[in-house]
Amino acid sequence: MKLLTVLLLIPLALTAQTSFSEDINLAYTNAMKGIHYAVANIPEKKNSISKELIDADKMVAKVKLSKEIGGVSVESIG
Image 1: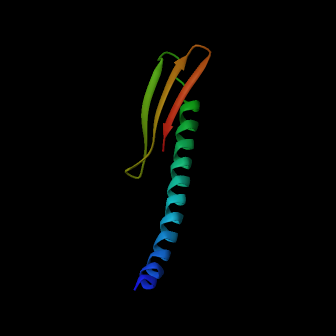
Image 2: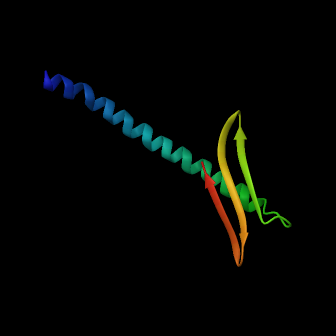
């Protein structure tokens, strides 16, 4: 009985690991899209912006950009 349980759980664990890796890669790609958007759209007059990038009714990334002394701070969540 224990052997049967183990044999049934192994494929479940393998698919969970691959889907987790795919989710991480998708989140990383979406966060990079947010960073590219923020760098391309640095405002001249405002000190900070906050924007949500939406594609096909799905939020791709949440971007926060703020100007600081000596540079720009970008936070992107994909």
